[in-house]
Image 1: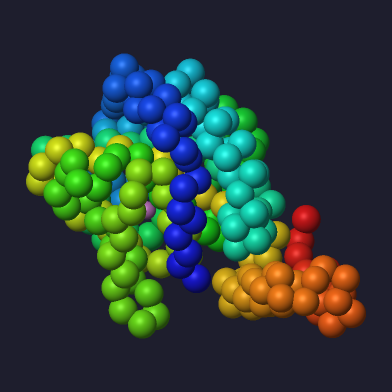
Image 2: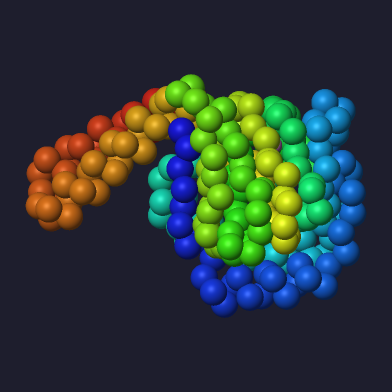
Length: 227
Ligand code: NI
């Protein structure tokens, strides 16, 4: 399932991220790549674990925790500490798949990548190219969102980033291990949850049918979740 989460960061947070990233030191993006994706990748990244990446990453994790849409859609169990990248001057990232398991360097923290996420940090009018292209079952999805918006997509998908031919594209990216591993099960839970919310808005939280459906939601989650 692909899902956009608009406005994860507000204007004040975006200004803070922009200032910190403008002053940051960038390194070759291939520092974090597997051998296969290094062949296709050309961009710059903040060093993993650098003070700026840690500070912004922690603000971003806080924002994720405050987003009911992110929590309902991802059912997050673990989130890999966010990384930050910069594409300019023709940089791009050819077609690749993300590694199934991400191990944080210097620790035993590991995340199974069920979902990949990109948080757009630059105004889309300020750069050309830079679309994230995800190969989905029903064809290619091209994604270029407003600054502060997040896209969630299956980490199992083939995807690439088109070359940036004008301006600079800043983004954060990370992986989520969901409590519900299967993409279809997770989507079913998300759709049921959304339908219950709509019904509750129409009839009230204490409507007996809302309560029964909420019980079914939690019983499905209990069957499918690993925590
Ligand atoms: Ni990728």
